[in-house]
Image (cartoon, rainbow over all chains, first blue to last red; front, side):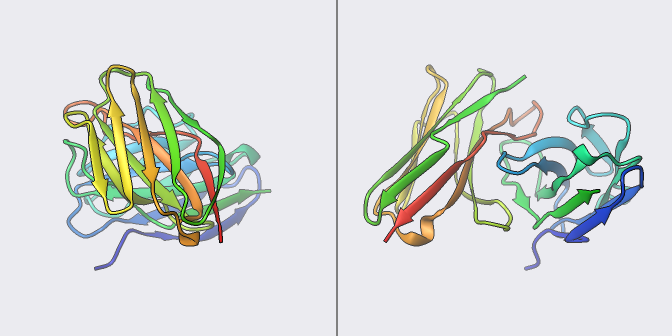
Length: 115
Length: 114
């Protein structure tokens, strides 16, 4: 079946602009996660959703970052007033349930470059 | 919060040799430890995981061991092949009632030389 998909695959923007990154989880998966991966580093947790609600947003670096999942499926990560330090690959993952160490399946990522 | 340390950062082996990657974690409440393989420009893919109620798990050429007392876990790859070349990440989380977020190590770049 279809895996996690993310759009766009690449995004180039200018400092100060607003960007939206989209994630389509595996159908039927209730949990959705956002991570950020800088070059040469492991993924770093940002936020995760159980259904429509954000269960843990402790990884969001500041209030310029916001994410929604209004219908419990597709999620959008929104970054306001982008800064050069926001440049990274933004990864989305989904899992069937939350609890008990469910496998998180990752999408291909969106490579964000802020000039 | 949880901190995961991973060693070595790079590892080069000859085809057919074994490779071992080690990770330590700081949060004694962590109970789920997956390993992901990431090829250049691709998504991380789960290769094996272990939960804190077992000490070892094997899947063909791959095995993971967990020492809860020492708070470390290791990935073992036997009979390495060139297609095993990739970056490997360990991770830890407090599954079941805690936060489901994965805390990753910094990765190990494995190169298998033919």
